[in-house]
Amino acid sequence: MVPLMLAVILLSSSRLAGRYLTVPLLPHNLATFWLGFMLVLAGIALSITARVSLGGNWSGIVTLKQDHELVCRGPYRLVRHPIYTGILTAILGTAIAQGELRSLLAVALVAAAFVRKIGVEETFLTEAFGDAYDRYRREVPALIPFVRPR
Image (cartoon, rainbow, N blue to C red; front, side, top):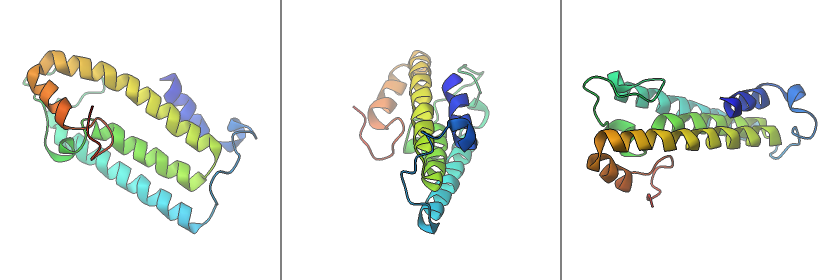
């Protein structure tokens, strides 16, 4: 939670970030604003679509529910963790629109937090679904679509 809270602080206030983290990295213009805006929309849409695809399997904590199934449809065909991919895409869009070092740092903090949580989730899913999850993990990348898993 700490990295996520720091990311929220960095994204929401340039005053709290301090002058060293508000260094501009990208031009502040309409092109970067609209690119960022479109990434935010795409990220939110991906996260919502993924959540709908999970249906009753979704939980805010890592847990096995009654009649839990391994979901491989919808955005789960492209990445194993599309909610995280969507959130990261939206935060990247925000970072591009803001164009400052603090925003890039926020993306890195959220990515690190998600990578840690993915490790926990994947261990749990491997125990719950065994060979089916191992096959899925070999075929579908974790976060970035079209990048072959190792």
